[in-house]
Image 1 (tube, rainbow, N blue to C red):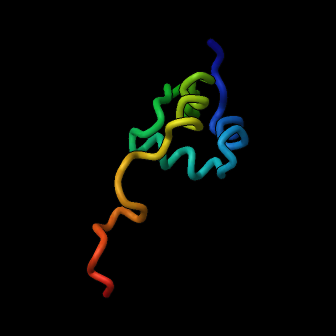
Image 2: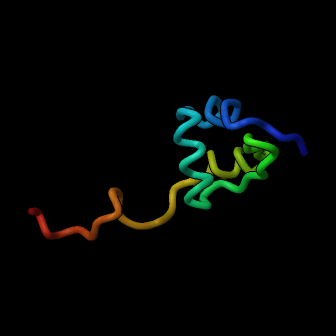
Length: 67
């Protein structure tokens, strides 16, 4: 097990470090706080890369309203 920074996690996931911090805040990615930085387990980042999206409709809205 090794730890990666939010910047490294962002590179692995193909997103920005800001997005990684959002995912941590939303508790979709587990991280440990060390000082002012978050560190993530590399296997957690890989897990999220494979299975990160939650099930359900895209956009978070139920289908149908069309408005």
